[in-house]
Length: 280
Image (cartoon, rainbow, N blue to C red; front, side, top):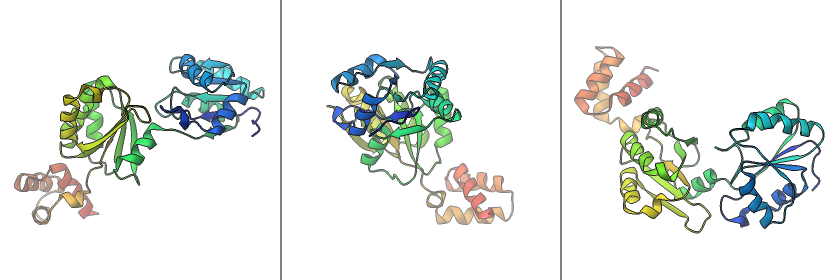
């Protein structure tokens, strides 16, 4: 394979098992002029393991905007550059967005070199629906902002995928159970492709207990996947629909949803959404 002059290669690296690196990735990393790495020390171990001697420069959250300018200048001068993160595919909850955006804006060719991704690896083995999903990255660290974010996703029918840190995993799963309901199905994938890889599925309520019972399951890097909300039509039974339709003949849509919720016990927001669907 010949390296393209002035191209930026976005290179995926292993998320744990070094055997997951591709032959193409190793060839690119060996042949470019320089490698832009999230942490040069971390990536240095990977490069040393495979005998790659290409020099590295640091590109991380704190310097990306300024360093990107100098990298784009090197691309415009004809040098080929590789971008790597600490693990997995760059830009997916990792630095690199500003560099890729600047490179494309400058007319430089950007070449993906696909490979490992914790997001897709976890989803493929979760057993949850994967035809439609949304990746939300890391939830906010503060409880209020985290709950607000989850509230906004509560009625999303797609599988929800999150990354989470070990020191927040219990808080996050507890918050999900509180907002989504403890009966919602979810899967926790931990330490993917590593020695202590764990993929465990249950209801959110049971996952809270599972984490509390075993400190080892609170260690490592996490991907959390939550089943999407059931369609509104499936949650509004025939009786609730009948009550709602009768009320809609007499009062406003908003009032009908509120009254039907009191009568049937079905959540008001579900009835309101159902009433909107009927109106359409």
